[in-house]
Length: 166
Image (tube, rainbow, N blue to C red):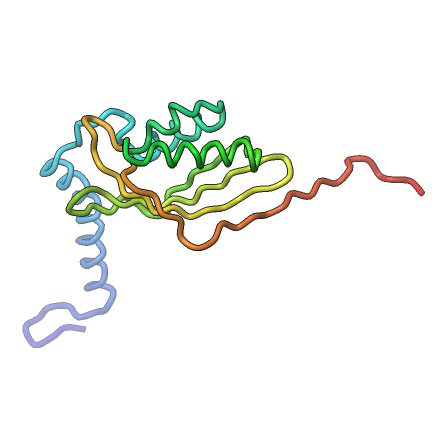
């Protein structure tokens, strides 16, 4: 079917053109953005996943000084007490940090939401952290940490691997 000017009409014809344009835009856009803004000159610690991985490793090997080095000097003492409480009082031995969303830039730093799951053999504790990150030289440090809501504690059940006989 054609219109008065002789152009072909059709839903599929027009949608095909729109899809090609969107696909091209999706392919070109990331390269355009990286070319315009360039890559940040940060150490691997500048990457949130690497940053959280370093904190995880420090917690699991019980390296208090490496763990609190992730925090700004003004809150290191407080976070050291939190570290001691998690390790000694709650006897947590492992942790998993999972970023929720990405970094949100702000005027005086960046915000990152993180689900922190601390575990031991009997229980796990889930906290959602709101981290305010700032740059200190070539790395990010946590200027402030707030916990959203109450920590959720879950108990681990273990069942014997062998059948019990009566």
